[in-house]
Image (cartoon, rainbow, N blue to C red; front, side, top):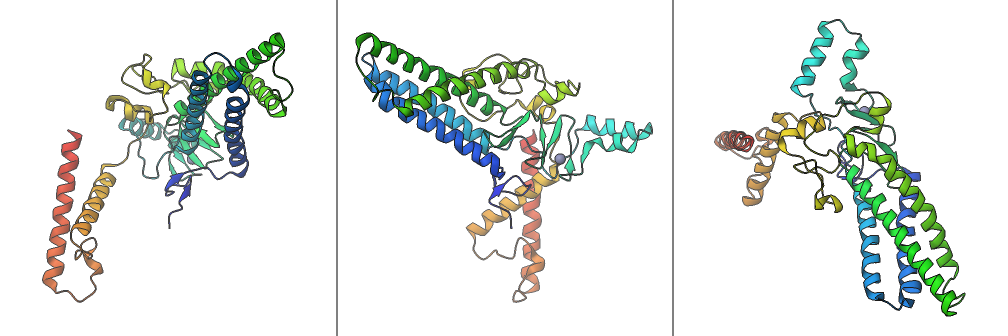
Length: 342
Ligand SMILES: [Zn+2]
C-alpha cells in the first residue's frame, strides 16, 4: 500500500519525515506566528499613525512568508520519477560513450543505484530525501526539504518575505521605543520579555536571510545550481526563461512575487527537467482513467479492467465483449494522446 506522506516514488503527498528537519520546520512556523501575534498585539496597537494599515501590511507579509514556507516544504522539489527516460540527445551521448569504450563508471553516470532510477545530467542525489532531484541546490532543515528545480522559487520567496518581515518588525520596534522615550509614555509592560525575544529573532534571522539572498543571487542570474558550479559543471540549458521562477520570458513578472507553481514553456520544459516520461506510461494512465470513468458510469463493468479476472459466472460472450471494450478504450486513449501532442 502506498504511504500517505513521504518522499518515496509511490508516496501520495510529498513530506520529508526527517525528525530533525520536522523540528526545525515546526520551530520556524512557530517563531513567525509568535512574532506576528506579539508585534500586532503589543506594539502596532500603540502606534498613533495608521495602526490598521500597519496591522494589515505586517500580517500580509507574515502570511506570505508562512505560505511560501509551507509550499517549499510540501512541494516535490523535482524528484526524478522511477519511469524517467533520457532525452534523445542524452541517449546519444551515452551510446557514444559506450562505443568509445569509456569506463563502466562513466557510461553508467546516467543511472542512480541508490534510488534505482535514471539520473539526468543536472540531477544530484539527496541523502535526506533519498531521491535524485533535478537542479538540487541544497537540503534546507528550516523547510525540511531538498531545494530543487520545482521549489526553489518557494524557498527564495520564503527567505525574501522573512527578511522583509524581520526588517518591518524591527523598524516598528525601534520607532515605538524611540517615541515612548521621547514622550515618556509606555513602560516595561510595552517592552516585555516577548517583545525582547521578537527583537532578538528579528536581528538574527534578518541577518541570516540577507546573507542567504546574496548567496542565491548567482543562481538566479545564471540558471546554474550551486552544486553544479562547485563541481565545475556549469550546464545552463535555457537562456530564454529564468529557471527558478519560470514564465515565458527571462524578465521580471509580477507572478514571481506569489508562491504559485513554476511553469515552463513546452519548448524548454524537457530540457530544463533533463528527462522525459515514456509515452506508453501516459497511455496506460489514460486507459486507467477511462476505465475508472466507465466504472463510475456503469456499476456493472467491474470486470472490464482485467477480463482475465472474471468471476466465472459470466459467459464467454461477456468476456469477449469486455475484451473488445478494453481494446476500444486503449485506441481512444492513444488517439487522445496523439491529439494532445499536436
Ligand atoms: Zn538517486
